[in-house]
Image 1: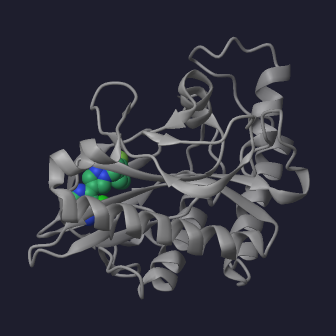
Image 2: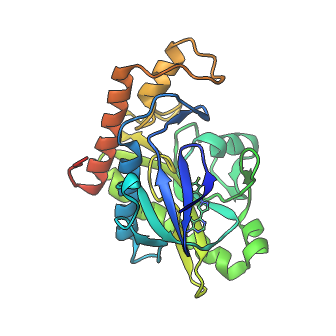
Image 3: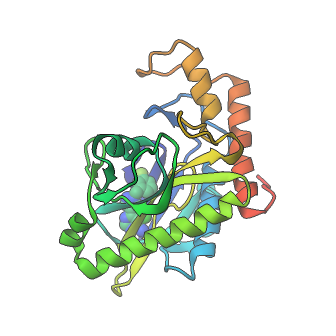
Length: 277
Ligand code: Q0Z
């Protein structure tokens, strides 16, 4: 097993032709990893993503080889997957206005070249979900791209498939979550091409690390929305006097426990399965 990549909260290992994606219990706020882990977070997000791959298999093939054939030390929080030739764009679907999409709308009235109605505010639901790809930039944040940029990079027919698949996955995910009190405001997907040339869904899908999950009961356009998973950590961080520069202070035990409960609730509400961690 060879370590090939470290993200903020995840690692990639290579095992022969396969990759292992390993999720840790680390959590970040304001782009900074906190010194205190959230117990079971890595397992909860991995198992949610694995569940989604099964739900979405009629829409698009995925990279999953096995969620169980992984080294014992990674049990439950790793997936074995096929190594793909990755598409050099993040495929994002947005159904609500937040984050960089909100900023682009406020500056231009459009997102990724898609013109939106006037009068939308932070947290507004969009009339239709919008495909808002970004180009992957190794240093720093990803750069916004238009559908035409994607077409210039991968060809019109692949770009069209990426857009259609991204919006279909988002619609399926948002509708399932909405039935259970969770708004999926937006989601980021990664695709690759398999050795046999098939466009394949990769990475993690429809987790709160790759999407904005909001509690539907607290949705109120016109202000920043509450994050389903990290709201307690953010509230604590804001009240703690921490200046948002590293190193972050340790998270108090009650905030850790409340946050873990949110990850469990998201898993249970979305899948309908009890968490047996
Ligand atoms: C995913 C990432 C990180 C986990 C590369 N099937 C695949 N084939 C080739 N490359 C990837 C995948 Cl999923 C791939 N990432 C993002 C970063 C941990 C996933 F640190 N990068």
